[in-house]
Length: 328
Image (cartoon, rainbow, N blue to C red; front, side, top):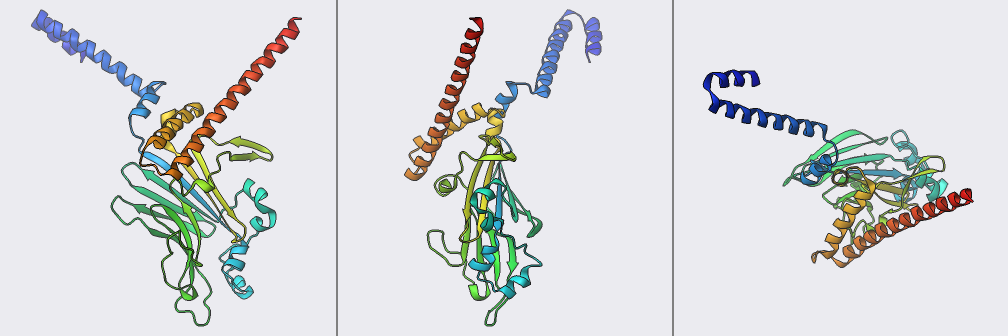
C-alpha cells in the first residue's frame, strides 16, 4: 500500500504527497493500536475489563450429598426397600459416621449442578454425578424459569396411587429437593416460609438475606492433609450440613465479573467488593436484613486488611531488629 501511494505521489505532485504522508502516519498509528490490543498488557487489560461487561457473569456450583440416613430415616424406607434401591443408589455414611469436621474437609458429592449465568439473562445448567448421567438445561429471558433436574423413583407401597419419587428441581432463586407422587401426594412444594413434610432441601441461588445463614466467609480449601489455602475473593462458599436429615449441600459462586474487574488480584478484588457493598448498603431499596449482611461482609474485609497490615508491619520490625543485632 505504501509503495503504491508513493508512486502515485511522484506522478501527481506536492498536494498528493502531503496526503500520502498523512495516510502513512495514520497507518502507523493503526498498527501500533492493533499491537497494543493483541498484547493486552496491564494496565490496558484491566481498563478494558472494567469498561466492557464480561459475557459470563457468574458460574454457580451446587454439590449435594445423600447420606444413608436420608434414605433410612428421612424417607423412612424399610430394609427391603433399601435393598431394592442399592443397585441404583450408593448407600454411604461418611457424613453421619465421621461427623461434620471430617466431612467438611472432603465433601463427598452425589450430584453436581453447574449453572452458567450469561449476560442478557441466558442460563446454561449442567447436572451430573454418581446418581445422574450428565444432562443439560437451557433457560432464556422471558421463558420458563423452572425445571426438573433429577428424579429418582422409590419402591411403591400397597395403596400408593402412582409411583413415588424424589425430585430435584430448579427455578430462578432456588434448587429444591422434595418427594412427589404415591404416598407423598402430588402437591407442588410449599413456599419456603411454610413447613412441608415432603420438602427436604432448598439451596439459595442469590446472595443476600436468604443465603446469609449459610455463608462460609473464612472457608479454607484443604489442598493436602493439614495444608489449607484461602479462598480467593471471586470465589464465595455457602454450605449446610444437616446430619439429622442426612443431607448436605455446598454452593460455590465463581464471580467471573469480579475476577475481570480486579485483573485476578485479590487485594483489588476486595476493593471492588467494598465498593459494591457500600453501594448496596447506601441504596434505600436494600432491606434491613440484606443491609446488615453486606455491612458484615464489608466489615470483615476491612478487618482482614487491617490484620494483614499489622502482620506486614510486625515482620518488618522483626527484620529491622534482627539487622540491628547483626550490626552490633
